[in-house]
Amino acid sequence: MAKRQVPNSGSSIGHRETRLCDVFDEAGNYLASAVMRLADGGGALLLSRVVGKGNLLGYYFGRGGRLVTIEAGDFRLRGRLRTRWMENERLWIVDIEESTAAAAGA
Picture 1 (cartoon, rainbow, N blue to C red):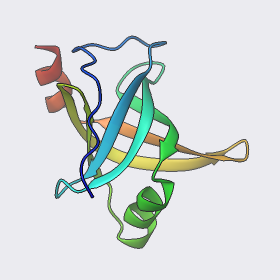
Picture 2: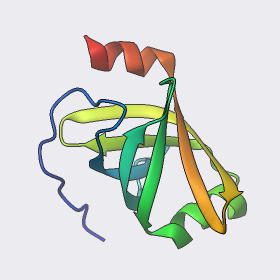
Picture 3: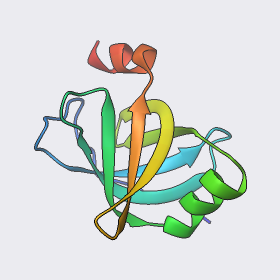
């Protein structure tokens, strides 16, 4: 499957701003596309409108995968995937690794 290209979305994101992104496993394999926004308090990205939920479910629950890379244009961050059930919907969260967050802000 070819990687879907996302529009160049700049290097910063505000708390209420959303961006289209792609999610890759730690080996660089495409998992899903989603809309991301910075969680209140920072340090994590909330993923919504996920296309490829089955891939994320298989990676997380089937293979026990947690490490992911988020890409949006030139913006790339590594983080730890987690999920929870909230209001009849699965919420996907990526806790950003501090080293990549510092590099992205440089």
